[in-house]
Length: 106
Image (cartoon, rainbow, N blue to C red):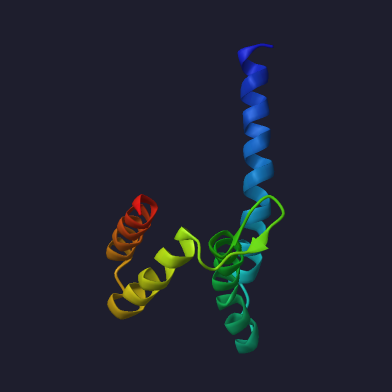
């Protein structure tokens, strides 16, 4: 392939990635959404984060089984409490990492 072909492929991939993200943003920015829809959309990041984090923290094994007393779970509880009390992202990450590493060494 030539350099122009690669450039065309990269350009096409960029458009295919960018357009589906840009179009709803462009269309919806011109309209006022109902309050209930805005409230519902505000909950989506929390739901996605929960769906990603909780299975990783609360399950283990090849067939996933509930395992509450694993290192990740034991480190997550005090880390969550620290996060709720301080609202510090950096501190929460640091506390979580230190607790996880300390529990791994036990």
